[in-house]
Amino acid sequence: MKFLERIFQDRMARQVLFWAVLSIILSLFLRWPIGIGGDTASYVDAVKFITGEEMEAGFDLDQIKNRMLAAPATLFFISLGKMISGSIYGSMLTMNCLFYLIMAVCFYFLALEILKDKRAAFISSFFVFLNYDPVNFGIAYLTDMGGWMFFILNSFLAVRYFITKEKKYYWLTILFSCFGVLFREYGALGLLNLTGLIFIDNKTKKEKMIEIGKALLLFFAFLSLYHLFFYFKFDYSYFDWYRFNLESYAFNQDSQKYYYSFLIMAKVLGWMFLAGWPMFFFGVKKILEEMQSERNKILLALLPAAISFLVWPVLTQRIAFVFVPWLSIIAGFGLSKIKSNYLVLGWLVFYGLTAYLTDYLMRAINIGL
Image (cartoon, rainbow, N blue to C red; front, side, top):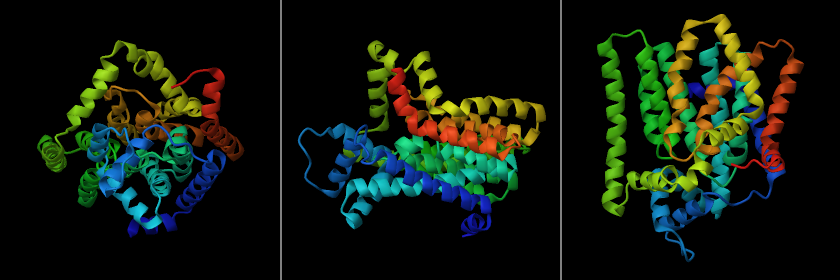
């Protein structure tokens, strides 16, 4: 309840929410009807499998098992929404739009905790919710949005604990990491931020080891119990899925050049934060000039989770999005140093336009992902 009060009391937070709603409307207007592709079919099949509906011929049972293992909470809420609305696609889209709004507001407060400046936090928020990935893959018939939202929510809670030392934020980070990982793997990355922040905190080594150990033990105990239950019930584990990706992409020389190479990384990261990169480098310059110790320590502690996408054997836009919040805090800080509101507005409009036009630009330049 206090968090909701903060939203309604903070004018900037209300504006972030307002602009995020407009972004959803614009995205739906420009992209309607939203295409059905990518992973959508496998998640639809998984919902049908869970609810006992008739399946279409040719479905992939291993793929369904993976969806059930990696995103059970996502499938549950899609199924629940389908019972109310009668539409799997409508349920998926509604859930993603709700998560999109929550993500935007949570990120504003995350940036505010780190930057201690409402204008900078407000500007940073636009770099996240107007980013190419949530605009195109979040407001869509896909399932990444829930994981992204919990990643940012848990990052906010972890930073809040680091700053206030209030124990409730420590426990909430662990709790929502356990809940978030049931939406998508990204949802657990806030726990990595928590451990990083505890590591750099001014505590004794013993206190750090106890807090980090307790958090990891609780999280992995919960996750292990669920995965063991799933393995004994369906004879399928996450190692099966990871091995499939390794064999199909990382260890497959024909696939490597399309899914993991320096050129692919440059394409993915370049297009993903296209108009944000100049402001990111400007922000790095300003941060180095000011050299504020606590802010810089927090940013360094958050970096491992931000680049954790490098662990996955396939490099795609959606997986790499976890890097965007970290980039956005620095880019927003840099842009906030420009005093002219007209120039700031112009850059944010330019950034937003690139999010909606990136697909057209990639086709025009003939650089696909």
